[in-house]
Image 1 (tube, rainbow, N blue to C red):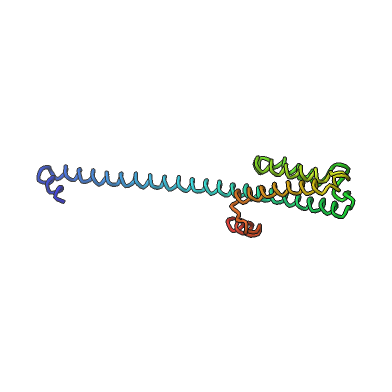
Image 2 (cartoon, rainbow, N blue to C red):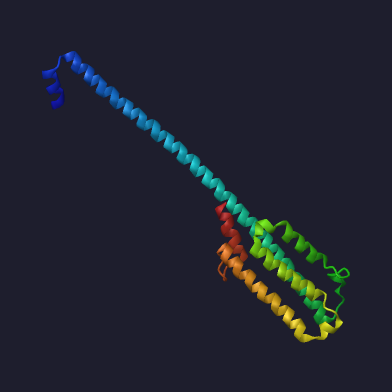
Length: 193
């Protein structure tokens, strides 16, 4: 206010009115620019937030798909291992899981691993292929090897070593505690979506 009185004593009223209008106009221009910038920043923040949410949703879907592929292939190998093991223990015919030297269910595991190699990552791909190779060797033991208990045990031990590595990798990859069941992981993942 003192500034206005000072200008009134020094300058004519029309000049003072023009200066006041100029100051008021400058204030409104400044206010308008601030509001425009604020609106633009909010718009960019919303766009960035949406982009990050889409990326996060995509990553969650990829991780979920990876989890499903890994667990289904591991389950298939364990079921096949149990079937092969049962046929050796009971000396039953291996035709239920074998077709000549081929094990069709194991071939399907190899195919799924190859198809999903990029999704599951090189570490898990190599680890699961090694497990599958052990199963293939296990299924193709000939009659003399079936009676060699040490060979039989060594093959199962090797499978178990790779299975332990699989579990450790899954725990690390999906932050799964050893006490957490797959349903806990499923429910927590579904809660996020």
